[in-house]
Amino acid sequence: MTVNGPGDSPENNGRRVDTYSRDLSRPDVPDTPLLEDVQKWLLHHSLRLVHGPGEVACGPDEVIVLVVVRDGRPFVGSFVEHYRSVGAKHLVFLDNGSTDGTVEALKGYEDVTVFSTTLPFKRYGLSMRKYLIERFGRGRWTLNVDVDELFVYPYMDVVGLGALLGYLNGHSYTAVVTGVLDMFPEEPLSDVARDEDEPLKELHRFYDISEVREEAYESVGDIGNVLANPDVPILRGGIRRTLFGMNSLLIKHPLIFLDGTLKPVDLSEHWVGDARLADFTGVLLHYKLLNGLYAAVRREVEVRNYPNRWGKYDRYLKVLEGSPELEIKAGTARELESTNDLVGTRFMVLSREYMGFVREEDRRLGNPPERHIERLSEAFFRAAAEAKEQGRKAWDTRQLMAVAASFQRQLEAVLGSRTWRVLDGLNRRIKRARTRK
Image 1 (spheres, rainbow, N blue to C red):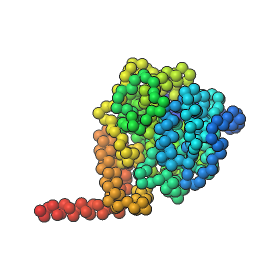
Image 2: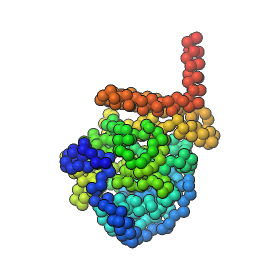
Image 3: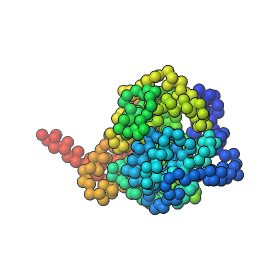
Image 4: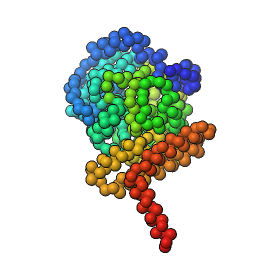
């Protein structure tokens, strides 16, 4: 689906492109099935196993993390530690010519596999991602992410990864939509070298969703995906709109089960096709806005590795060259103290059934009922605040009605739960008691 709109904006140099990052004109999209098979064959025979096992056993309630990487050294420590803590079975990296010590750092981990290839990313980028999925993901769950992305999901302090995959399997879902949330530090960005192992979560604690715009998921067109929850949105803009004037696409589909029907990397690393989408959304915490952004942008403008992002990096460079110290944190920024802070916002959409699943996990773990009531209260008030904020920004009546309907369904998912009704009853009794006094 190729349309006009943001494709005619300056960052795309007036070229006609797909506003949802799905574009047949990309040089890394094979023109024919035959060319795709040839690229797959060439890629397979170019690979060299550098570290770890070439094959990994994996059960139905386990996940393998798949990454294509180049020069990701500052992210390695935080990345591996995060996915280990989440409960990933194994991490597989396909390195494409790193020169900054990325491969050497990864060799220090036993639960990591590293392949390498020297084929040009400009031509083989999507093929590399798809190859990993098809090699390691048939009949399995895989998490397909970049080295600067950390996957989180609703109430992961209660719901373990195995339980989450069990929930997905039990409902025959084959993909989870995630929002991409740009994280940034409190201090301004500057053109200085990054530390070898930058503590991402500790330093980059802030986010800003004031410029995030929401569109109906169906706006992308018919790519065969089936929505279990109509409130799952397409998100765009965000802090990159504020800083660089870009209408960036802020959703991906990283957690997938390759069942023989799902189409992975469907014309873009952001999309899949013919998937049964879960009734909740996760989030990719995105750590692009680091001090190393200056050097990374200059390098990309020089080598042009990302065929669908050339205009974007030109825009980055123009802004960064004019701002030796780029101030990101504004009054609309929020500090992320827990991933549950995102529940009730557009980045973490929930269903009534998922909330019931969380309640059962709470009960199974022996948590007191009051803890689940507290979760429901937090989700309710956060969703109500988000609805109010979006109502202020709605620029026409149709959008206002759509936003209101979406958040009404979110609130109903919370209000319809049994524990919320108990809480509401208690509140009514307290009010009556106070009235008598």
